[in-house]
Image (tube, rainbow over all chains, first blue to last red; front, side, top):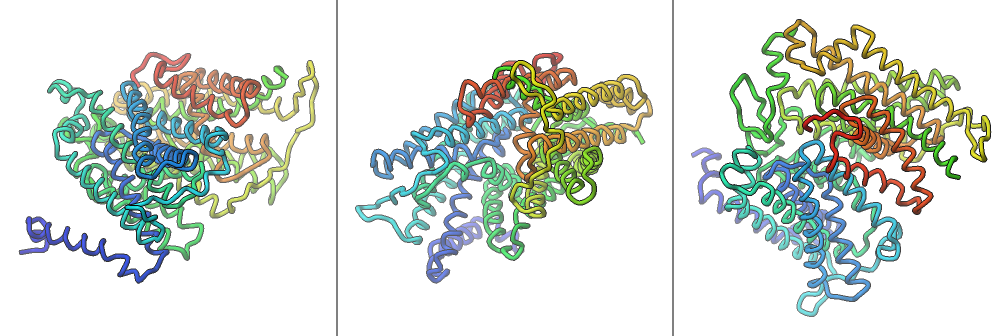
Amino acid sequence: MTLRNVYASKEGKAIGMGGLAVILLVLPRLLGGNDYLLQVATMMALYVVLASSLNLIIGFTGMYSLGHGAFYGMGAYTSAILSVNLGWPFWITMPLGGLLTALVGAFLGLATLRLRQTFLVFGTLAFGEIVRILIMNWSSLTRGPMGIPGIPPPKVFGTELTSSTHYYYLILVYAILMVFAIFRLYYSRIGRAWVAIREDEVAASSMGISVFGYKILAFTISCLIAGLAGAFYAHFVTFISADQFGMGESFLILTMVALGGTGSIAGPIIGACILIVIPEAFRFLAEYRMVLYGAMLIVVIVLKPEGLAGIKGLFMPTTGGRRRTTLFRREPKVAAVKAGGSQ
Amino acid sequence: MFLQQLINGLAQGSLFALIAISFSLVWGLLRMVNFAMGEVYMLGAYAGWLVVMYATPNLGVALVAGFVIGWIVGWFIEKVAFKAMRGVPHIASLVCTIGFSFFLKELASALFRAETKSMPSYYSDTAFTFAEANISYLQIIMVVIAVVMMVLLQILFYRTKIGLAVRAVALDYRTASLMGMKVDRVTSLAFSLSGALAGFVGVLAATYYNAVNASMGFVAGLKGFTAAVFGGITSIPGAILGGYLLGAIENLSVKYMSSGYRDLVSYFILITFLLFRPNGILGKKAKL
């Protein structure tokens, strides 16, 4: 029995998952109370959720969005404002942050009726910038560039969660729940509908799938998850400001998905882990760490367009007249020209 | 005040118009967008700054340096993000240029440090005052350069053999290649030209704002794309019109709302036009 078979078997998977769960559970002990490393692990869990939620839009449904940082920020700001200004507890403000973000996400999802591919990317990008500018300038509500300090930590059964270990477990539980939910969604009727839309919109709609409805649903669910993640983040760092949720954040989350793998469950998780570990591991590179991000994205996309652990055949080049599974239908382009012998 | 804002808007509009032409050049040929256009513009600005600071204070040389750097970077991006990815769906190329945009921006801020470099000002004296509006020599020069560039491009596209080749490939690359044209070379040329144009505008913009920094490219690129969509990305005259209109609207809007919201107008225009009139004002009816 080769290693691959072991991994593929049901027992192998169960053992692997169990092992991972045990490691995640005892991680605070393993790190020996190193607060800094524990915080990195917490951020990693948070970004795993964010990347996985963006994968709902990009990988499952085949729409590209560059506005995820804005949704993340919207959840964070809603929860922070409600709890600081009105003194509401975390367990009420957090779902409200998620709900508001989901509503806005559904609204943006309406845009997918008319926007596709490149234009959807720019549309969501502009939307993200609008949100950032509003946060920056609406001083009476968001305190503008000063940010919101002193966000109260969440309470569980009357005790305030203050230590890094508490946060780690809180966000770990959230991350596991969300990834599990996304996993279940992917293999449900809804997930199959999304994949059908990704593969061929016309065929999907002729099979009776409400293409537009499912696209909006993808946006709504994805934004709900991102908004919740934002709320967790706000109460974890206790200080938020507009520049934390700008373009760079959207880039980062998109890079996690594209690098780790588009369309698979494991891809965004891998991508998030790599991109959070790299800046910490390569501290000696100083400013050049961020350069590495961009370079990695370029290299991976050119060599393996579907990412490290993406769905195979997602970006398969079309060769000859035969249509392969692709993320988007496309007219046979320059590949055909080459076959035609232009040189 | 109204006239002053309008004049500032026209000067800024020439910058937008030139970037918009870069976008519509690539769009016309490949039906793709180079997301890193703003970063090419930023690198051009740095090239111009280096020339002015360390070589010669001649603005003309700086403009040429920006042009050359833009050409080289544009050529390189085409090779990696487009040529190496032929046959892969467009969106993968777009993601690759998003990677380039991030990469170039971070590279510049690592090489030149994050703080804003100040560019010496040229010809910033007031040329003449017209109804209380000051017009500087630089503003006149910018508009003139922009117009000359546009005329040159128009001649290039409609009076030369190279232009004919570019138009043929844009119209139907397949037939063009069957006719024995070197499609790859034409694509590479047009792409490099669009990069060169962006680098050139970068130097102009650096002189106009007296500032160069690594993050100047993002907003400029997005505004340029907005201008292209606004006027009609499928046509070069449309891109020019979009650039000037956007410049004027943006500067006039400052009168009515706080300057913090200034960029909001452009992004709002972008979203509105993408949603309701994706072909822009002058664009031909085409499926986007």
